[in-house]
Amino acid sequence: MRVPDEVRECVVYLGLPDDSPDDRARMRPVGTAFFVAMPAEGLENWTYIYLVTAKHVAQRLEGRGFVIRVNLRGGGAAFVRSGEGLRWWYHPTDAGVDAALFPWVPPEEVEHRRVPTEMFLTDEVVRSKSIGAGDEVFMTGLFAQFAGSQRNIPIVRMGSIAMMPQEPVPTSLGNIDAYLIEARSIGGLSGSPAFVRETVPLGLGSFYLLGLMHGHWDIPPEAIDDSVAGDHAEEHGRVNMGIAIVVPAKKILEVINQRELADARRDATEAEKRRRQPPLDPSLAD
Picture 1 (cartoon, rainbow, N blue to C red):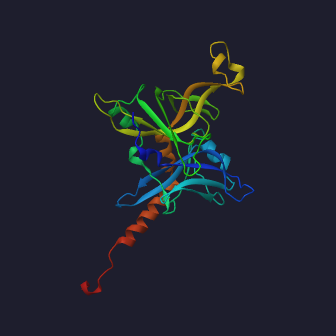
Picture 2 (spheres, rainbow, N blue to C red):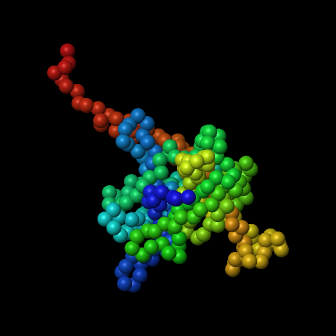
């Protein structure tokens, strides 16, 4: 399956600053983030932009000065420093949702694409498109071992849906609603967007934002037995089962639609509508 080039352009890298002695800015990578755009209700060509990542990535950065590595329209990459006074937004009622975001309109010189909320996989789309086990999934994000020296070069990983959300999945954050994906997650992909393409009889079907990458499902050392040991064991004693955990897109939407953010969008939309209204012509008054 050919992945559209535009998909890789929605992601940026998050990390902590690591200023080298030669004064060249560097970054200790922490994870991936991606841009999401929500259209303003009743306004054309007006969207609200959020930078989305995994909650466990945001918590490593929260309260600290961190950097966002972006690609530039004119070529090359740059670091945008952030963090001071920044508020991360999490799920308003479910602390187990591994998603976080903050509103951010990147500078004009930043090259990026946005995932519109209309592309989010909803329960209705799952039913109408018969999305289920076996459908193709692709995710894109940071490959920590080779992030790109001149520009961000996101890696693309392929897989398929192994299990639909039916019961909460046990993770380090507790039991969460999640998709299980037949794809081995790697360091740096946390917070990456994951997309699913519908299966059609001929050609390629539409694709949707399935959710964001939480990480891989592994087994702690104390739970390892002969059935999962052997070549699968990692150096730290845990076992990567080749199953990735993806937070559903609808959970991201619940974060975006929490009351405070929704109220802020409504107020900004109303202000923009008033600004767009043509001025009154006093000559038309009675």
